[in-house]
Structure formats: structure tokens, C-alpha cells
Image (tube, rainbow, N blue to C red; front, top):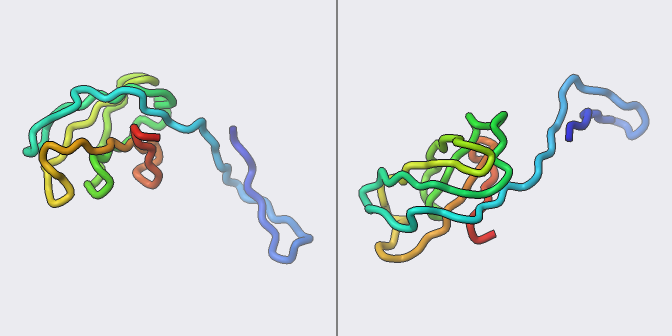
Length: 115
């Protein structure tokens, strides 16, 4: 849904912008496979969920664990993204599961597989 952005400096006179703000349904992640990979990175991970809109395909990112840097995601369909894991660093504990996060707004907001 798109809404017109307007503002007022004094609470009475309204100024309209030529811009719009767009709301989307929240992303959801339901399945991730494979569920393990090498600490060296490069494992291709498929992320199954909902809300992966093609119009935002260039803005999808994945993050493996809360502290890892985001990596670009490849948009396959409205229900499937793919990301290659990054090389493990100080944020990775070998043998421990970690959350996978997905963003469709360039990495500003993320949704995890635990949400």
C-alpha cells in the first residue's frame, strides 16, 4: 500500500511531498536448507518463506548470525531466496546453530527464522 507523504511545520498548514512511502507484508522464513556448512563460507543456502517480492529483488540480503555482515541474496521466486554463507569469523561458534536473517530493504531491517 502506498501513502502520500505530507508534513506541517506549524500544525495547520500542510505541505505535500512528491514522494510516497510503501508498506509491505512482513517477510516470513519457514525453512532453511542445508542446515549446516563449512566455516570457510561459500555454502549455498536456500531460504523458503513468504513475501519475497520480485520488485525488491535487488534489495534482498541475508545474514548468518546476528553479528555477521550481510550478504546479497538471489531472488528465485516469491517463496525462495538463495545466499552464500560468508566466512566464519569471531561471530561464529563451530557446531552451534545460528539464526538466519533476511532483509528486503537493503539490509536496514531483518527478519529471522526464529520470528
